[in-house]
Structure formats: C-alpha cells, structure tokens
Length: 201
Image (cartoon, rainbow, N blue to C red):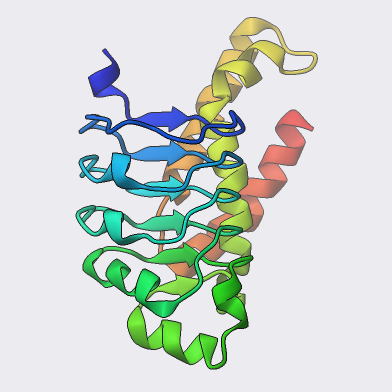
C-alpha cells in the first residue's frame, strides 16, 4: 500500500507542483532535479528523517517545521535568499545535517556566523569541512540502498545466489552507518568504500 511507503524517489521528473500527500510512514524522499517551488505537500509526513530537494526552486523551508524527526536536509542549489527563510528549521529539533550550498544566501555577509547562530548544533556541508565527506558518502549509501535489487540482478560475474547475498551485505553495511556520530562514521567510512570497490567495481 502507498500509505506504508518509507522511501520515495521522484528525482529528475520535471515536477513543478505536488498536491498534499498523506504518507505518514515516509522516512526518506528524493526530489532532486525538478522544478518544485513549495514544500507544502510534505508538512504532514511527520516521520520524515531525510529530504533531498537539491536543484529545485525552493525559497523557504517554513513548511518543514512540523517534521520533528527530520535529521538530514539537502536543499542545495535552490532559491533561498534570506536568513528568515532558514530560521524556521530551528523547530526541527533532531536536525543534524544541512546542505545549503548553491543558494544566493551563501553570498550574504556574515553568512557563516548567522546560520550558526540560527541553527546551533547543525552541521553544514559548505561550512563544516570535517563533515563534507559525509554528504557525498550519504549519496553513495542511498543509491546502494535504493538500487540493491538492481545490483543483485546485475552484479558482474556472479550467479543469482551469490548476487543476492552480496546485495544483502551491502544493505546491512548501509544500515550500519546511517546517522552515526562523527567518530563512528569515520571508522566505518573507509572500510565500507574499500569493501564496496572490491565487491562491485
């Protein structure tokens, strides 16, 4: 049933508008590379943990203030211009990682100080260098999670049984690094990538 969907990928579909959706189980949504102007449709998806909305036409994130479970927000390459549009994220008490790169807000004077003041305790991809690897790695991890069935079917030189086992291991490894703190994440990162290259590249 659609109402039980936890992961939704609608990236690269030239979407301009989405009517309000009632997906209370939704935890992850990827809406990158569309033409979306408003996030109103997400305000009732109260279990969302992760939103990828890069390369759209978003000007404000005020509609996300009800999402108390939100941990990760990639809103890079949008149209956010002022700090007021960003301040509403202070209501997202679990928010940990934000990517704001590519918004005109970046060009404002005292950008770093202002966003840090508005959202203390949040790590920003374009401001916190020690976390920059986290954002790119999350992309790799999500693609594996979303496409593990495809990996299972197309793994090179592997029969279906071995490919199925491989896909399961990749999925487990992904789950083990999701939302880890810095020290644990750093320990896992290199080992995960080495194993990944060995298995599927």
